[in-house]
Length: 236
Image (spheres, rainbow, N blue to C red):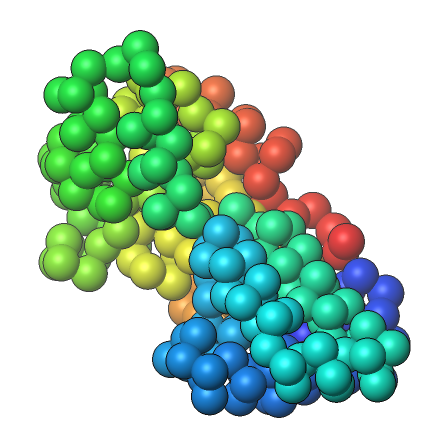
């Protein structure tokens, strides 16, 4: 779901959604790039922690202060909307997650290393998923260089053991991984795919309603969590 679609699902009028999108993607992105805060548009940021850093720096720029005052806080409101958009999904903030790993006092350096490698898509977790699934869990596509190791129960709410459990993982093509990670698709206990009503034009993404995966009993608890807590059942 794009920022524009998310705002409309939140109940904003077309005019308001267009105004906020234009502010974030247009003029504020130009200010940020001119000041050397970011190399691309603000909408290219997918991590909430990174966005907060850039947004706070942006708010200190004289042009932002001036225009935000004249616009009666419209620009700061637009930044808050985009922050809420990033927060609404389960978009991964890898740097913050890795920092959390190193702050844990009761695990060994070896365990921290395993968790870090798992978080960045390398290490034992990915290896075990490749061995288990032998290709994309949905399509069977076998070139592993294109495949993503995706957690079923999201990283941030999984225990350390669950983060490393290969039954808490699917090996997916990037489009399927993005849709699954964001809650736009899930799977029933029988393996049939479930499409969120918030997923626009799934056919364009190569996602079909007749897709399925082969699951075992060990996957079901993780998928139940995904359906209950990640899957987007209706508009916000």
